[in-house]
Amino acid sequence: MRIDILSVVPDLLHSPLQHSIMKRAQQKGLLEVQVHDLRDFGLGKHRQIDDYQFGGGAGMVMMVEPLSNCIESLKAERTYDEIIYMTPDGQRLNQSISNQLSLKGNLMLLCGHYKGIDERIREHYITMDISIGDYVLSGGELAAAVVVDSIGRLLPGVLNDETSALFDSFQDDLLAPPVYTRPAKFKDWEVPSVLLSGHDAKIEEWRYEQSLKRTEERRPDLLERQ
Image (cartoon, rainbow, N blue to C red):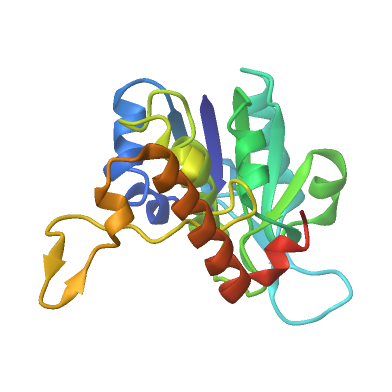
């Protein structure tokens, strides 16, 4: 999979994508992430990429021409399955969306900034809008990193145990059950005996019951989808 990210402040993206699982995915050649500085397509000697909005009002708007030039240059090299705009008014990211995107080949992520992008870019290029929550960030870079991480970890071969992602929270609209590791007893705190029994069927039944209980207590809205 290849993901191209368009950003006004590309340095924000380097660290989140160069460690842990994302680093491993790229080293294995399973994921390629390229970050593009929109100022490389800026206008004039100051490489301008934003301007005042028509109609007045506070805040600057990302200009149509630099954005269009950048997108067109990338589209000339390959076909994109989705061109995604990271914006607070997009559909909220969930596990289902990440699952679907992980099956794609080429994705482009456009990070919003300032008051947003010229609407003509959304009308003529953007195929999908994504938000990571009902709040506003300084820009779409951190949101883009979240999207890349949520997709990249699902690619076959990225995780050491490929079944791990199947049991994450939200995969079945349930939260993950409690997990424990050694020692089996610490102070007076003991691991549930069923997990030490070696009885796979009973362990899976316990995990499902705990997932259901945790979801009912913490996220009952997830059960309404079932």
